[in-house]
Image (cartoon, rainbow, N blue to C red; front, side, top):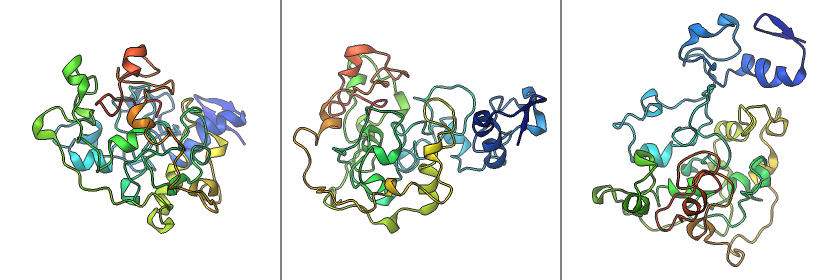
Length: 297
């Protein structure tokens, strides 16, 4: 089969999957010209969405995308922030975007029951790894997978003061997971999660899990990842099925790596920039002290 891009027939299978047919069938992302769609050379034949009504994936409210202060409240940050894949086709700042871009950046919905304690098995070294390769229990892990899941968890969000604000000014400003003012400080109740057993599979919505395990773009490259596509359903391994693992026995020195250790995953640290900007001083800012390690956790 072939598809047309800009009036020229294209027969490359890789190009078809990554740029045309996937978009034409699913329209999971906006056209790179959005919202100035009059600039799109393909016009009505474009494989990507030109309006919000065309997007075939859940969206946040436009006001949330635009950082309207009235919408950036506690329920938004704890329940919605970074839980949906980014539909924006144009280049933009990932750190200030309310959508997720990689599994380092994404959050499972906290309503499925995981707690704020960091997962000792969560792999942050290979940013291109499939979800099932990052933790043996996959979606059913009762621990937080990475810094974003922990920091914005209802039991952790804005319970710790932001140290960056006091030292050099907070680069995250209104998106910061730490409180800047006394009136912003939250008091979380006790953590009642049972970390000794996997989450109930029935607690994980099938539709959300299918979307979460099959991003509309290959992580970090913008291309389709065949390993992320599951025609007959999500990757079984990502559900943690059939795994017998002693969840209560955390490896020595691993239990507090998000709380105590610096960002060493090659991503953005306290500087708030993409790609590891900020160097050693920024990377050394720990979560426990109110420093923010987002790209490598």
